[in-house]
Length: 210
Ligand code: ADP
Ligand code: MG
Image 1: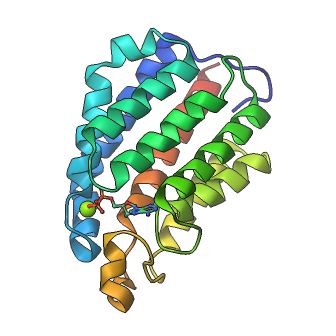
Image 2 (image 1 turned 90 degrees about the horizontal axis):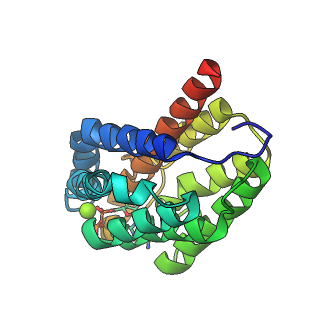
Image 3 (image 1 turned 60 degrees about the vertical axis):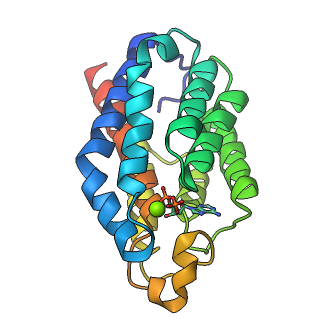
């Protein structure tokens, strides 16, 4: 993201929604397989339902300024994803919407993202190191706060998702498996890395085109 003030246009937001929907659809089977290993095997389907719902309403969502659009997308996720992850991803997007000004630069985005991640932790009664999506969201938040480049932030997300493999789950369904949750990537962390990498790729492509 550039250091100057940014305002996402309606077209930008539609493109981002399309990219996220496609990334989740392409990886739905993988996400489901991860959840089959340590959960109930619905994570890919849940996430696909959520991003398909956002995409179906993209015109109305993207007519709004970015903060309100993020809140509307978060509401869609709460209503359509279900499971444990629906309210958590919904909280992430809704808090980001509530915390982000209409015109923002890197620092303001990092501040809003940090608030959104804290809201997810409060909602999930969870913290770092418990093999949940927070194990990607916190490192991404730290990378944003440190002013890292989009490429670096994307790499941090991918590494953080990999780092959940040796962890033992302490929250969510995977925690029921205890030590048997070790050796598999956390599905929610995989989704977060996927979304961060998709957004980062979109920003990089846009910066190159400019
Ligand atoms: P469910 O577990 O209800 O089937 P999903 O399969 O869609 O829901 O999502 C599972 C993911 O949700 C996990 O991989 C984990 O990343 C995340 N998750 C579950 N519980 C929590 C929690 N309490 N805090 C943070 N993330 C959580
Ligand atoms: Mg599940």
